[in-house]
Length: 179
Image 1 (spheres, rainbow, N blue to C red):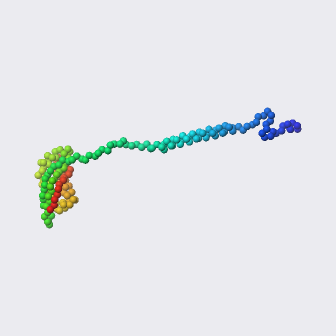
Image 2 (cartoon, one colour):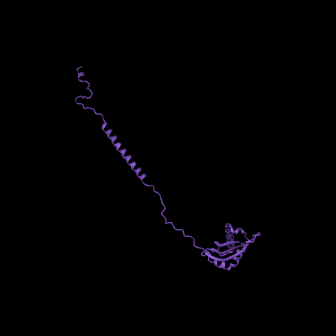
Image 3 (tube, rainbow, N blue to C red):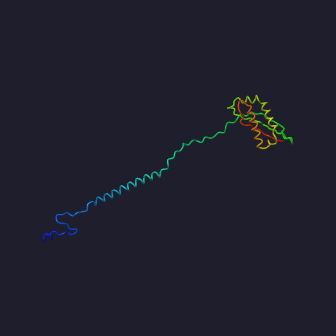
């Protein structure tokens, strides 16, 4: 039993002779791995954050049409004027006699588009006067109103355009007096 006493169990912290103290394996490498992992994670977060910040800081790329200088719209070219003259006619009111006088009757047309219209208007001047007189004597006091004057202009213009071959009348202007 003496031999057994020699083989005593060493106390914690004491090591037998010739034996080295046992150290836990992997302590330092585990800490090193955690530190490296944390550094890599921080780098990834910083890179992602900087990319997001750059995209947020930039204004969105919008496609714009190049600026075109605003072209000043020019009024249309003036129309050519053909003067017809003045007219006096008795209106067809049966109750009371009224007269209408229209002065400064001017027919307007596009001379560039209808270059032969001026000649045709000259040839048909007596026919045009007769048409205007015929239209006037068929009217009543309604021509003294704004709507009546507009209707009279449109009727004269339409009737004249129906007989013309070399072009069309664009507008007609006149002064009207009803008595």
